[in-house]
Amino acid sequence: MKVLLGLAVSVAAVLVILTGVRRLDASRPTPRVVTYATLGLGALACVPAVLIEYAARELLGDARLIGGRFLDAFVVAALVEESLKLAVVLGYSRRQSGVLDVMDGVVYCVAASLGFGLIENAAFAWSDPTTALVRSLTAVPVHAVSTGAMGYFVGRSQFVRRESQPAVLAAGLASAVAIHGLYDWAIFYRGPHWEAQSMMVLGAGALLLAVMVRHAMRMDAAMYGPEALASLEVPWPTNVTNTLVPAAPKSPPKPPSAIEPK
Image 1 (cartoon, one colour):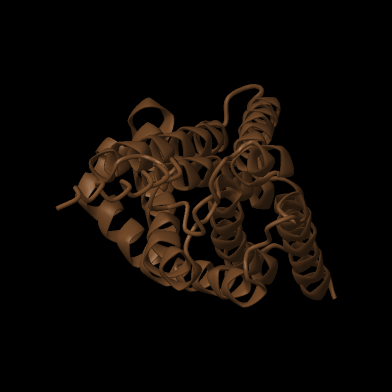
Image 2 (cartoon, one colour):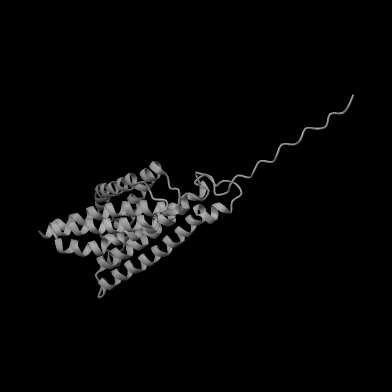
């Protein structure tokens, strides 16, 4: 009974968070099929994550335990998991429907993270249902917060020059690893106030994501909102991933030169 309760709470947490994020993007929502497929692929990403993390722990050996399992938290767990979520979004979501505004990147990354967090929490539900219940309110939101912050940069990367995109995506991955790693480090280290420390990381990460989402919505409104459209003298391009500047109007044709009388 506790196992089923743990699974039910985990699923409920995932649906509540994903529904809430999608409502923020309601004016230009991501395709429902692609969004939930991203969630499913995020769940499948747990398989390579287990294998890669096992290999990384074997490679690092006792070094991963230095500093209260610092490398275990930031490299083995956070870097591996966030990289796989990013691969899901770049390899599938962006190719299927494109990222037409900044909030699209946030929604897709949150979806991938929730799929990953759901499967991770389901594993805990089978072995420790009580822990799974607690993780539904802590670890699952941390996945959404850390990867959602990365999604802001995924969305922004669509509106920079192609040669600058890797740097923007790297900044997004770094932000996700920082939030995820700090949370895991507090739990792995188990200091005197590790519960409070982990909750502080979650709270600070959620505040940062809220600021990013607000900025993303403002940028999207500037690109697609009625005021922005009304202020343009020429139509805004349909595919804004190609350009953010409307094409200059063509100059009128020159009048034909006068014909001299014979």
